[in-house]
Image (cartoon, rainbow, N blue to C red; front, side, top):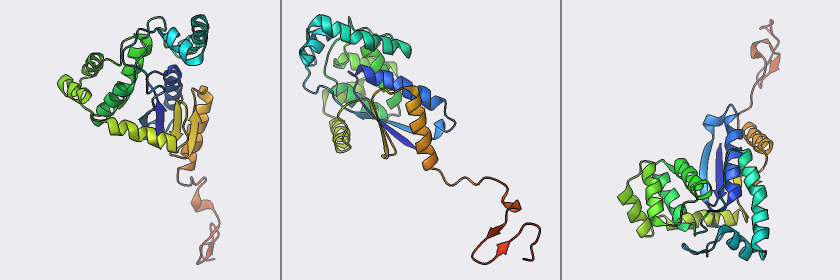
Length: 239
């Protein structure tokens, strides 16, 4: 079974949703047979890499509210994050553009480090308040995971993996995805948002059961059965 997750590193609910999804998956017996693929989505592709705005000022500008109202908006998000073991640091978070971070995630995927990179980027942004739009910071984070610093720098200084990011975004648009996180199971089921644990468990279990061969219950040797050629009654092989 394949689960594709469209998300953005600037999206607070994406990290919360990721945690809930992971907890649900970990509790299921078929977890080792589930392939998880992260897809790119930019909530604000026009965001500057460097800005003097605080998160609260950025939110106030985006939603047409006051800074105080923006702070109140984040209070509930902080509480939800804490419920899954995440300590968001909105007072210090640095708004930035996520495009290079998405390119780095695709590069990391080519090295088999996509899941580690996605987790590291989300933690760096929301918990550690690092500037994940900065190429220097991105190189540092990649090196922490054992990736080659010079190779990463060359990727970020060029335009490698830009098309991979755009391809993810096009696929998301074709599927009608307008917000993140968005979880797609085998391109048959979609889960929008950081849903409760039970929703993820139910959806994964249902999709898994539908994708499996028919499970035969009972001892077939003890069953009366007809085939195209004959009918067999247990204990009466001459019939």
